[in-house]
Length: 199
Ligand code: GRF
Image (cartoon, rainbow, N blue to C red):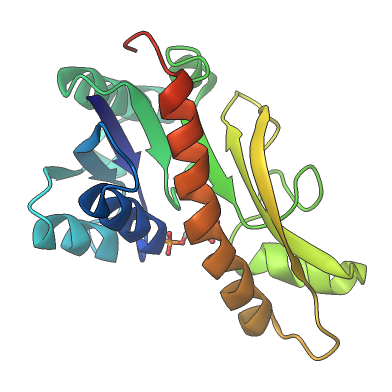
């Protein structure tokens, strides 16, 4: 049984698709061991409660710096014997010290076709704004392993969507998000099937 630690900062729709995929049996031999958020108001924490999944709010104000904050994350992840760390809309940039503890064990979903429209500051609406501004005829989402360089880790899989002439940030974001929910599940399944050792 693979144990997942899921980090989420906001709405948690990707988290919900993982919960639903585990409950439906689409993702086999996996369970969410713990859900961690940096945001006490994250709806992701509400979703955790609704599904009776252990969750923790870790308040940045309680830690003197990012390294110490991420040390707390690492402690919780290891205490819960997680095999994989899933970033499901996690807004904070993970420190090198943290990432190096979990090589090829951290998976992220990005709402664009990396390496395009990625990197520091490229999240949420900023990504879709950049895609629209670029004039690209297609966009999509990318599931990838997380390394110390933001959005530069090895790509696991991608899914494409068309950019339509009258798209707004919202219409494009919605189209991409629908693909994210499917792609993330497939990516997690493929990593779990290859996953061997514990963290
Ligand atoms: C998604 O668009 C994802 O690509 C990005 O953050 C957003 C999270 O949405 N990493 P949600 O919280 O999963 O609904």
